Image (cartoon, rainbow, N blue to C red):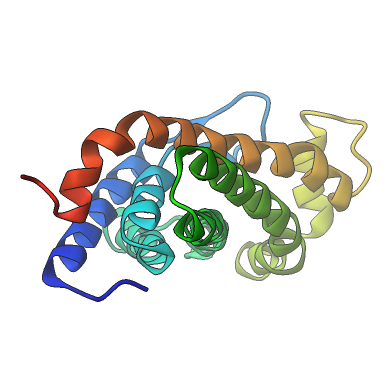
Length: 199
């Protein structure tokens, strides 16, 4: 982790605020269950991870979800935010840690794709073993009820593993790639500001 400085903390706070705002700007897509929404709120965390280091990226992930709980009055009893934190952290930590080893444009692309893939895979297991059981405790949803939300869109889905592999895995991967594409477009001009190297 880079040396903690006032500038790094300030940049992290600003990126966390931006991520919190982006988290509110989400879309529900008709070909996905309603609890899967699309946003690019991982973008500021990815920028932090590339510019300052993976721990700062994870910090942005944590702060954006805390802000969402405090300011948006979470309708998921913080279970949704927990899921978001797990997946976002897996994405930006993997990408940032790989990029830190070799800071080239090519490796940045490889790192972001790897981060999105890790996040997608982590999401399958975290949803199955942690998040969906927590939804069951909070809302008294059975696995059958959650599976039914997938079957409304694709009736041939027969079990939860299949649902997660068909819906969640590619969705999480593509969502990560979208944030990565935007990051590549804006990272270079923003890099001096993020790193405090303005001449």
